[in-house]
Image (tube, rainbow, N blue to C red; front, side, top):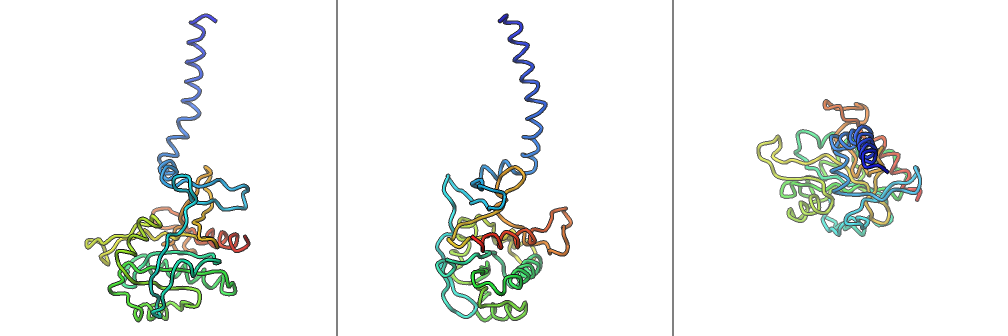
Length: 243
């Protein structure tokens, strides 16, 4: 083929690629999906009814081992949750902002699955020096938390921060300049009966990884236009309970 025509065809293909593909890549970058996919990839489920696994370095990510005490001063470990579908969050009882919303949403989930023996919740305090078992018991009473299925956990501070930031990749840090003196993400993690982190997929086939816990379900959206995800979390819990 004449080189002149070869160059024309190559230029045409490049032009078509730029028109069709590049805008989609830019859109995914602006929405954060490319970054999220690079950080924590998820296995594509076999069907739309299944939830994906969260992958790290090609391996299904499992909840790391943990051991803390609950509101009744009883030692609770990750092994106590095996066989249960459960939700994990990080909070503190004196939190003046998102924690009351998060706890209210979790109470809603607790009440939805009150008849299920295979559902649980684990809430880890990021201010364990203040959130003693007695303080956690008072918090449980205030929000009508069913402690037979929901553990409010406290203990070694470094261990809790390691679990949050490295174990779950859910941000938590001391920040004296913010209300309450601590910053955390307000995300919920979903764990299956075998201890694996699970989530539904977004429209690009990537796992959403975590569920927004700091928007009340009845509010639908927050001031930033983000939608609540408690309703979809409830649906996904039901799916895992049936596995």
